[in-house]
Length: 303
Ligand code: NAD
Ligand code: KPL
Image (cartoon, rainbow, N blue to C red; front, side):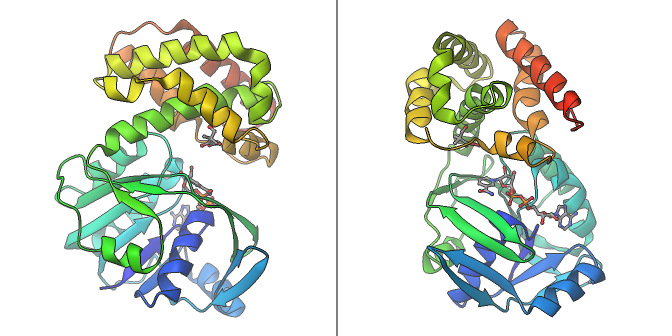
């Protein structure tokens, strides 16, 4: 049974290359025949690891192809996930499984609503990859991926494929708790790095602001039935800031490169969830507004 990778960007290419070189059947699903032609001209995907690059001639097709899909890895951005899934929904076999690698929260539900009866498995990853050219991906940071299914704690058999491909992962029956925790970390760190134009480590200058945000985010998690994800949040935020001190956050990098951010699936989702749970979070709301204004000022979408 072949893996299909929809969203052949940074993370999708990293996964596809590792599956392919472990002889796990995998193919890319590209947007249209033009992208497919451009890909074929390059002869495959190039993975750069520790300065060494290797070309992998991974098979590919395009969205309009009609062959059925049994196992799909969705690796586009959160704001593209629903549209991308809608374009392949009629190709998904009745028992198809879909692994969702989007950051933040909200896109997983959007996708699941489009796929009634299909198993959707959200994942949360700390691996780092970026593209340094068309059809080229750099594996920039070792990390780990947690995978789960909020509706079914039974691990899928295909985790063996990931083992074989040396993709570090853990089956995580509490995946929602992990996603909420990651969302809280990203909400506490990423927007402020954008607004203060700084690396993660420079956030030590805004200690009080971060501590106040952590307090509100912990209230949010508890109010949304995720009390466990709130445990020691503040200490964890400072641990991550220290561990990634020299890095620019992913949101900072998106804004600096003039790319759309995933704000709606991070702060936007957090603020909407707070409203639904009737939790008052004035600092978080103000931060969301300031970030939206900042994005307006840079000509980037505010959602
Ligand atoms: P990316 O922009 O590099 O790749 C997304 C790809 O999806 C692009 O190639 C885009 O053309 C493609 N795409 C979008 N809509 C499509 C459609 N309808 N049909 C076909 N292709 C489509 O993004 P990324 O950095 O790989 O991030 C993907 C997700 O993973 C994001 O939610 C991100 O936050 C998360 N993530 C990324 C990293 C990382 O290091 N890159 C790490 C952890 C989590
Ligand atoms: O995940 C991150 C990101 O930059 O998106 C970290 C490093 C945790 C900062 O929030």
